[in-house]
Image (cartoon, rainbow, N blue to C red):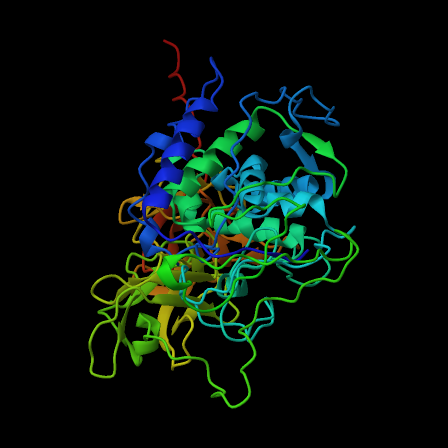
Length: 582
């Protein structure tokens, strides 16, 4: 079927009771003697204070499967080679294509963001909770789900209110957004987080390779290190901002860490329970959510049975959720609802962003601040602002992303992550826009300058002397620093100058050799190494004797003048002849 998640259970006594049972079950699910690999247990991990300042969540906080891992842990599986079927429970089995997608995503992130330390088991845990491993691995050979997996429309009735951002391109709904695919991305997040994981040139949220790679990048943004429990908590909460969700994903993560095995596609076990209090098994597919308020008395309308799609039961596939057709004679527009904070935003204003300048390779010390305002100039809180680095540049936000989405605080201000300057110099444009509303964006200019040094010193003090026509025994090595720190990758020039007052290249005296062995007295294109060091090539002397000057200069104005001496070799004086003998 096209797995259409239903409405979230409204908060109240029922939610409290369900949460209490879940917490008790979570505690019981830990087998005696099993530890958490030295990590802080999720139940004791406080949510990150930064979680609410992110883009809300990858999923729009849509419903998820709440089934707990079994009491018995799966048998440990070897880290290399084929995975044998362990003696553990069936829940440890992950469909072959889905498992392959998780492992490929881990490998890709290991290369592109090694500091993130993303384990594939985290993707497996989220995939289990979000879609039951793509509905038990019901995917085609290229990893695309047999039928769409859609969350409920986020129309504000029991869920967040997120009006359509993709014109129905991903979810088939041109009125409201719905979470899409095996990793349940909402379209506005997929628009910047989407990745092509299977190399077919497309970014498809319904493809498990694309979705797994996108989830990996999403979890690794903000320079998070997932081997650190605090960063791991932040990443999971940013996927779905719920303490219960964090606890549940952590339980499945630890369960998969203790071992898993591959099962054929389409044979994975399906979850039975969801956070919207509807069954989720394959034998009891859920109906799509229905717009509108609950029935009188506060009770929710009963879901009607829904036929399964081809490949799941042989019948027709349900269409993505869309608002109900308008009865004849009724207004063509949907019923009005109270305006959301996003609806009230009229324009964006700069919130005191300082001049943005950084040297190539450095992190910008100042950050972009944008304020969302109404037409009257009143600040608007809880609005998602998307910051996008525009154009051909290698400057990114810290973490390597070119897009970041941040919610405005109580003052209506969203502060973008710090920018990381690339090696390309010049101006970089960062555009701020409101997610879910079409109004003019606000552009900021960040300038990347050449790497610079403010100090140059020679690393040795040996005298630099040579005889006419000879070769200097010692090479010149210098060290560059900037504000006391190593200045690596700084461009430098070395010139044998005429005098301290005349920086023009000399036409006599010491010289370097080019690739053809010809004398040259100016070297360009030099750069300091990772330690800020620069070793100049060997120096030679012509037949001119005297004292000469070598000047080394760098981007940023640092210079160093070194003295060279060319003199004839000293000859020993003959001993006085003996006088005549008496």
